[in-house]
Amino acid sequence: MHDAPHIDGPSDEELMEQFKGGSEQAFVALYKRYNRRVYAYCLKMLGQREAAEDLFQEVFVRVTRKRDHFQSGNFSAWLFAIARNLCLNAIRDRVHHVPIDDVHESAMAFQPAEEYDESSEILKKAIEKLPHDLREALVLRVYNGFSYNEISEITNTKLATVKVRIFRAKQRLYDILAPYFLDKV
Image (tube, rainbow, N blue to C red; front, side, top):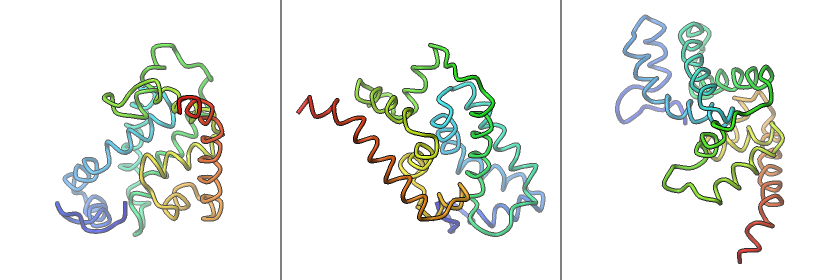
């Protein structure tokens, strides 16, 4: 998560400086480090594979176009802020209709295929019921592993607000899921 040197090479910030200087290899290294996480984030936020794939590509196009806008700092927070803004725009712009073929894809986005079962479908639907701001904070924390400070930076929100959103998201999930799982005990 942090802009620290990686075992396999330079830090994210060093790679961005190289990329700003024209090194395509630096961009490839950053892409390899983040492509899976960015795609997973887009898929979890949008819930539709095709839309997530398009937006995922646009994120890296923006990184290329806006590379000179990156100032030293947390590269992953900058990258996910781009992804977040594109996701928010896509959510605002799209019709709230999910084709039946995409329902299965969005359910699979929340857990690996080998762990997919009825419980993951229930969890997926519960997460979708959360208000957008709570769902976003939860996805960034739980599925992407960002710290509260990084989420604050990505969402341009006060740290205290991030903590409250994650707490409320967990609380609402518990309230939504309790009837499903308490009956099975």
